[in-house]
Image (cartoon, rainbow over all chains, first blue to last red; front, side, top):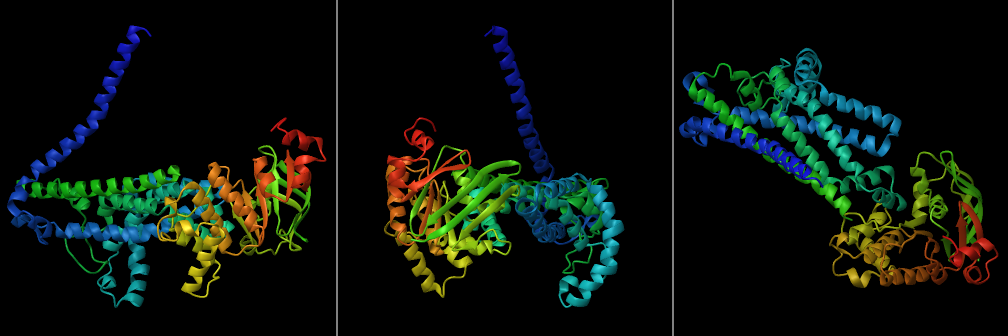
Length: 306
Length: 252
């Protein structure tokens, strides 16, 4: 080995370490900046910031609860719709479809993930919102109107529309992860079930049992996506900081309020309120994503472990 | 003794590749028939023809007839689920489900709705575990994970799981190839005991094992059945020169 080679390698190594360290520095800097800038509202409202339900920037009253509520409820709607759909697609792709059908469908699902958020938003405004106002809303009110969830006026813009748009946006990622964990379930598990006289459905149940924690991981990952989804939701959710039992009423999410209000938040306390919500969203999605990664990893490990 | 399984002119293809050539063979009831031959000779493929496990491979194609109890299992209206219940299978690598020991054995009973009630289910599980010589080792931890068992115990659990659905035929695809000598010996003893009630077809790459456990042995090479004879004869005076060369270790 020539000496220059060794020097070259150590320079190379150092450069790579610097690159890798950059990520850690950026994350640390983001947290530090957000904590520092949310000090005014933390001082002013303390924990009450998260439980306060009034949001009146003109009177310097900042309660984040409507946004937290909107974020959680719209994400739950998204998951309730997206998880069965994704599971169905993934099971079809892995367990049923012959390769020549599975490949184009998988490709289209991946394509769905590549559509820009704002395009989903446009589609939401011009297609989904009228559809909900004219068809889905009246249908739900006719048959399930006794449930408070489906009462209220129908504008087409609101919590439900936001949730449905989110569902479409998280379906590709959940499908892709579920498909991956189903694929690592050993063929031996399927054959064991089949050899005992299991039907295709019973065999699939065994496969799902093998992949359970990975599927949980996929769901949590979808939750992480839904929590942080901004543009499309901002366009269809109505952007009104209220807590209403009705899914047809306009709502607001943390991500949306950040995107929509930064420009006008000139006041120091207003800015601090927005940044503190950003911090909350950051921490929650950070934890949710870490949990998802952990769950998915566990399946991969167990499958290769024996 | 009558033959349980009767195979006539069986050909098997993976797409354009032929894996089995014109195989005709009878497997007698309540005996052990061993299948030996070099790797890739088609013995595992042959075994998987008998419970139609090859159906899971889209490009697989079968011709000829395979009759079990006189019924062609490749006839169009065959109930494959019922067939696989009747023809159990134990695989090369033990493959317990990620469930408890009890639930592993109970699985086949449950999906085939064989039990009358909970007590009946427990009795059936116990019997299967006793028949696979595992009961004494696991009776105190039925509700723990099957993955906590040793490799040999897991394989006997898989045998118990297969026995629990009361099959008539058991196919074993190198069931001891991943096990240590003591665990292997236990499996072999079990095979000899099981033939009292079951017809057993066992694939093995271990000729001593074939000699120890089987009544008859079939020798496969390159997808062709070279010879089938009573095991004792096969290992002392084989009819074919090829068989003799293989058994004496001249190739393989």
